[in-house]
Image (cartoon, rainbow, N blue to C red):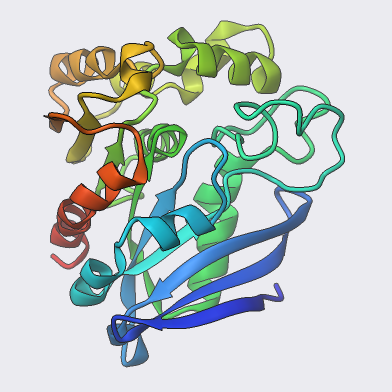
Length: 282
């Protein structure tokens, strides 16, 4: 599959690149960002996937999080895809910020008119890793995933739905229980229809209840002053309770004074890279 390089910038001895390709799953052109650390010049490195939140593109994480130094030091290839298909000319795709463009929610849509393009779950778990494995110096068995907000939800469900596929998972302010929050209800009813049993297949709190228990060490950071936490969009307590009941190890850190922004992510990104490096470089 042809990759077109859009940009390349040297950063902490490695290269931050952006590519475009024709996605089979999403039926449109897609961009993804990839950071190749200095170690990638001489050998295969582990791959760490970042999933961004609502309204983001592949650019937000690479320009705002300050992750490059830690990724360079630990020798991790970091991949950040876009958050939805783009320019599919679906009626209503650009009408709201929390549904459609920039809001793919990392599900495979089953409803018209979304089901042809909105297949972000399969894109992130199957198509993109195959593309990365075929074109870049990564070691396929060593793969982890993390993300923020909608992307934190995405990271958790990808790990929980695929036991053993990812060595580790972490999240910043994830949407933990989408079937019960306004964002999730809006997205899931649009993409997945009215049968709420189908929604549970993409809800971390429900997925962890049936998780078969292959080793998974979850790290979650949540800002205490996050407006979306107080608005009931994130619902981490429900997820923590479900993990505790299933004895799935989770470290949950409520960070005093921090909000939902990339300032919060930038503060703790090195901790998260270290968390993944521990498993990826073991």
